[in-house]
Length: 351
Image (cartoon, rainbow, N blue to C red; front, side):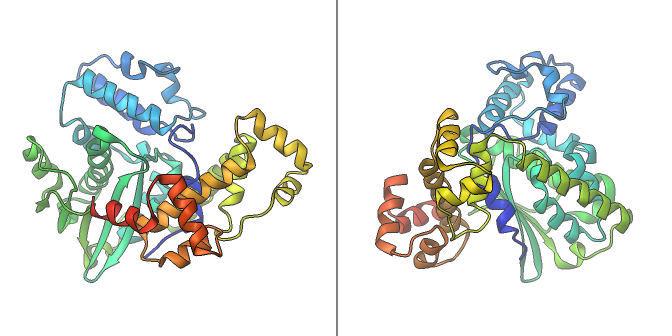
């Protein structure tokens, strides 16, 4: 199993209202709407954005803004299968520089790992994980935050986009072994069958695609090691630039998740930014937060991540989020979520 915890947790340290998501997918939405004869003007209704902003490399949107645009797109298109429509239109360029890194990889498995590693360079609205499971490789997907009725769209576009690209560029022999979906079978299931071309299982524990090990280890005809390395370096540069360009609150969040389990005192963080403690406090206050609020938020999000995606014991999770005393961690977690840690894990993993 491949997990780049440091990068993944940095992404999770941001909130649903943080404008850190690249808008590539929404540019794709505009294209699909216009190709189907719909007016895309109202895609950004309710937002402080112009339609043209979606084609700017400098634009960043929040998860909450993304949900508004998804809702607007359903209203404009009138198509309940909108997620699959978008998935079927995805091309390499719609994933930004990550798409070019993926396309030049040696094998499909390498491509999946690169896709997970650099998902932040594309339009990242889901938490995507690749794992080895006996004779299969799987790609699982779930929304980064609570998405309500948009959950199905996010899964359709995410998993459907991957399968659509494989069919388009590598042919029918890339058909998955199975696709699992967490929600009930939709009325337009025939479109699922046509798009995925494999057995479908609804109301499952997770959303994932399963492929045979042999298929995932097959070499990609377009493989180009030099191009892969060049694209990877570009992706790394984009991420590094973005991590250094946010406000001081975002920079402090990033600093706090660089070493899970070790949370530096305010004085140390201030020194990292060549500030006094009082200057850093004032800067954070100006952005509507404080060091303690940021620390609590990072701890809460990391605790939830460990509880819901790992089999770590409660004692281990407590240490990873900075608590040497388990009872203190239990009290803190209940104050954050209203639930005891193990109760939260049972509920989250059962849903």
